[in-house]
Image 1 (cartoon, one colour):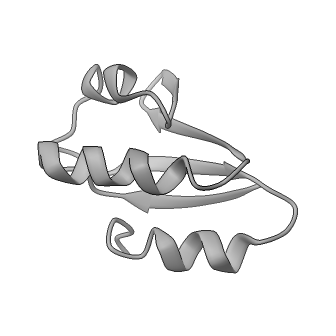
Image 2 (spheres, rainbow, N blue to C red; image 1 turned 90 degrees about the vertical axis):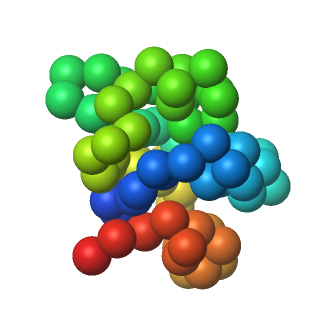
Length: 77
């Protein structure tokens, strides 16, 4: 599992983020405080506080580099 911090501070970013995730047959979780939601769920994402960075857990054994390259616009350092 790999964890990265992401920022989803606009509706358009959320929509494109979910579209990018659905290209992969891997489980993704978003963690914000004590909440853990499926990152492929638009409704779930909108239940989080999007004004703060969110942790994205990527449950993949291989192909991490391709996933990180696709998600680069959302990842913050």
